[in-house]
Length: 83
Image: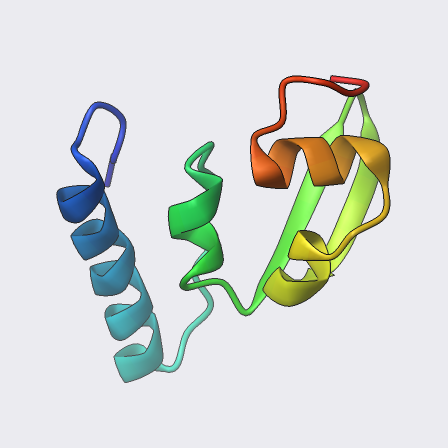
């Protein structure tokens, strides 16, 4: 499924569908997205690779509260920072 180019409402519907199916089937879903705000609403765990290094691996809340500058910048969509 792709959410690129969708409006925020339909993007969230796709994320919710993924989460609901994952829970109903009792499986793991791997979702790759640059829509961080939408992704964090459904993720139990998140990882952020950058230039061959794993900068973060943990909970969605942990990503939102990360003190790693690149993770903080990406998660919060900041224009200032190392990225």
